[in-house]
Length: 480
Image 1: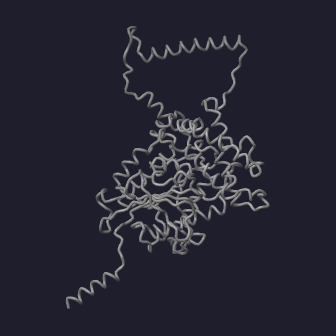
Image 2: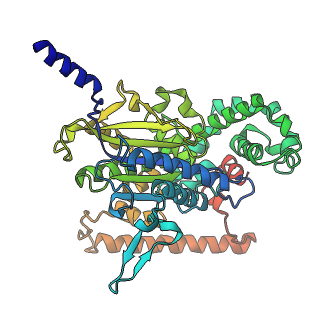
Image 3: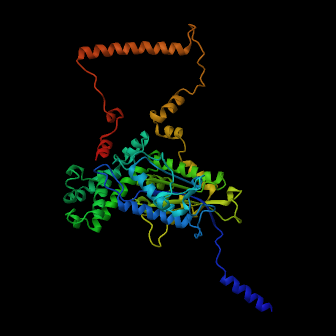
């Protein structure tokens, strides 16, 4: 009998499914847009192929995090009809990124037919159009501006110190050496680039724009439309993408000057806020989705030390690439963990569209030994690199206009100084300062008038570039 009981227990254990104790509490997904038209001609648009790519990636994450059949389903998330309180989605105000996000969200929560219907007070039933198409609000992100409209990577950030930092790359020994050593390579591409680039622009300076133009042609153009397509061999293509990756990664990140990675810092703040909301609401907020350009990927990769985990993180992420931060726990039960120490974060990345049986791969953040980081460790390390408010952004970037004008005013005049003091004459310091400034201004204006009248000079409007004292490198790169 004893032997029989042991045998029965062994058999039951063998037949029982393996239970994964880990539970997914929430996630933050950040994805790149799908295939698009080239940047060099402007008015960049998402293609049908790009629409399909982001929809397929969204469909994958539906199967992973939304479907009730998934072992990785986010606990408590609505499996069919979207609950707007559980999901937050954002993308910069840019046609390619906004449309990509919309296509992605269609994959996350596809049409549900008659399940998306409503009964009115008079008993009439109204079904949502397009076979139960589900509407998910998409808000404008602060990660970057016009991300796919501009040629130059940092031109989208609007951060003055980041623009200056990126410009310093064009003065570096690394850039100068590559500009010289690749000159003949880029000039050899002339038959494929004529009509889109001048001979002077066929250099490493325009490494990404040239790659982007030829990459689009490689995907979309037939031999008749692209007569020299045979010249774009695998060897040439790999060299193009490697050089473009080096060029753009160094524009987006510099370990000795992290303001260059401002877009990644803003994204880090958004990730912290999104996952933090899941924790503070005890799981009522469950899924965050963001969209951006490869430059934002690069910036965050650098800040989170991902190149230490794999050199691949210095290469350009393909269209529809995605990274995800999973909030997980191994605590028992079905309630949201009461203690933050029971919550961890896992980072995963997939290059390009997720198809077939492929899945995102987990990587170690911040050069840590484990792929899982405790929430306290993750939030502490990420807080060090994150920019989470307009005031932080203004202080880091040194901007004083636009949204930073009020910050600059507050910083220069915090209101804590005593302005009631008087000098020996009994005049208040504030009034004395104003009078002194007015006298000085009158003298300067008088001298300027004499100078212009006698010297024959006239006042002309300065260009934005000269006003900001930007170097020729940046001006050319923005116009390339």
